[in-house]
Length: 288
Image 1 (cartoon, rainbow, N blue to C red):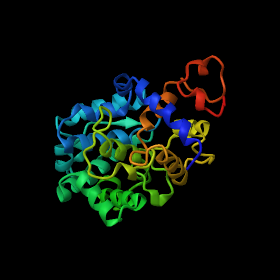
Image 2 (cartoon, one colour; image 1 turned 30 degrees about the vertical axis):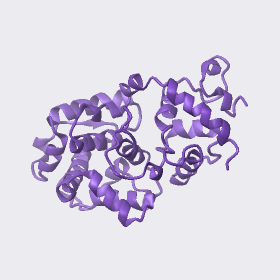
Image 3 (cartoon, rainbow, N blue to C red; image 1 turned 90 degrees about the horizontal axis):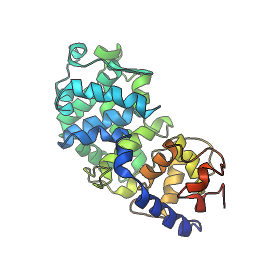
Image 4 (cartoon, rainbow, N blue to C red; image 1 turned 180 degrees about the horizontal axis):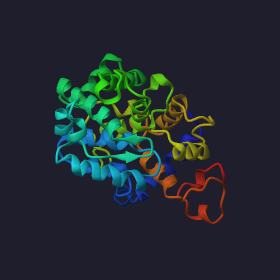
């Protein structure tokens, strides 16, 4: 048994209780899929929202919100109906850093074909998970391949996915930490708890922490990892530590920890003023 688990768990459980979840949801990309009710619409909106979740949420979220509004009342219907030849007239304009309408068209087209074949993205992932015999990394790789392994020539001039599409929907086979993919899976598998949706019938214990700079920094402070790289191996190590706190739901602390970092309440180094009111100061290696 990891010896830090005994005093980390009460501190992180208290963090969950104190989290103003509804206020944080309003500033989080997960707020966008919460605008829909049908599972397939939530899945497509969540796939887009998680895939675009790089950089600052206050910059990408309003642009994606506008894109979804102009797309129509059903993102799933739009994905199914997307035509390789008419996509420019079917989709609203979108631009955020390295991502544009063409990239979202590729993602929507692949997801739409998956909906046609399997009925839902959840059914697809559940099949991938079963074929992979519960191996999360292999299941994720199969899931990504099923969406991007379509003929994308009409969109990008080549059959295979572009570098920008691989960035949006990364595969663990390419060494990525797959932060946005694991974020999407967390939304779909955990819950329903007011934050995550809990649509998919996959064990919560199979989830991997969505590793970004905030989670990596806080994980170092909490002693969850000593690794310096934001890799899939680091994500697995952090998840394994969290599994000793809750083996059935190891990533349940992700939303709270991530927003502790995003809020600016947790500084990058020891700060007497900023750290004074930190709810996890008592277990932070910067202070104990």
